[in-house]
Image 1 (cartoon, one colour):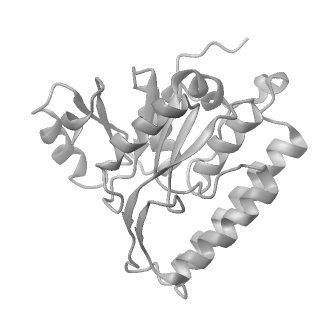
Image 2: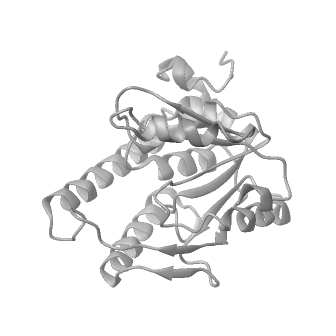
Length: 240
């Protein structure tokens, strides 16, 4: 898949907690390639933390991520990169609502997704129709400005990074088509307690991002001394 890209590339596999044999398996796979490496840490910390951890290890001028669950067709990476170059974008996001996306997922989740995106538009004014797909690309200078300010480690990471980037003036945020197939898994049924807890936590995280952004202005340059520095997530940025 990486060989098909017309750009020099590296793949960083982040294992979010060494709780089973995943890290060893990923290391064995990475050892077969010069442009693939595996990194990780001892305890599970959440998607947001894992993505930021991987980005802190990256070297490219364009940095992206893709969820590892294989719901999203990884061949779409080349499509996102072509859109990135075409639009001269700050950020490109994979979108289920792009007109030529190939999407298969339950109608219940479509309703929830639509409702959440309406909330996101109302709170943050982002002019995109889908913020939650786990495949995005960023210019490196965007990340250098945005990442040191972020707090969310789990559910609302995507909206925090997009909302803060937009707030800081990176307005060239565009959507690209994807191919995705989502199915309900054990514990993800709409009536399950686990799923309801996840939805509730995501809403709380989203409202917390809005409160920090619009009320506290936590993400503003003038509040840099309040940002929670984590040396593991250092994106080689000097904040003065």
